[in-house]
Length: 259
View (cartoon, rainbow, N blue to C red):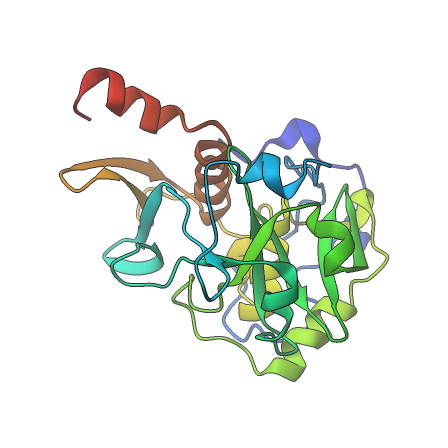
């Protein structure tokens, strides 16, 4: 879970920016270069909605409730991420219903059983901007959903969001970039960076030090919380998405009956 130096695209030093292209970041830079590579681990597959949610049935108002793994994440003592049903509406909706709720700059999450979620920034007229297959692109939400349901996750991360026009500027300003030019490792990191403008979402965007640690708490049950420790937000995100895709920690808890 280091910087994964073996996967860095070889570019001239002059080609590597030292800050965010949006110019939003105002603190002192924490790294000298950015590492450019994309490792989008999820695929938007062609499974039908009935396959993705065969054990679920929508309620009268059109939402579906999944039995998802819940998380909370902390940087030192500060909560930076929360996906807990007791604190948040985790209902998911059909794309048609979701589009009636969206505004430009909203952070969207498409979910399916046993897959990492796919994140995107809503533009307008059913269009979203997202990282997919090593490219920043604009697509119809109907076309990319492939049966997945979705929700708005503006409040999933606890960082202060940028104004909607700057979110859209971040997203649209990177349209057309491909693998050799991309410094986000998955759709979530790109979409979250667009909304919050924090370099921690970029690959290699922060120095790995012993002082700053991230704690991911996986809430397997009411009395069963498994804590994982990371040295960067990038590593925490990647591991959490692997758990979403595999459910390994949940399976272990069921087998062992404990953490």
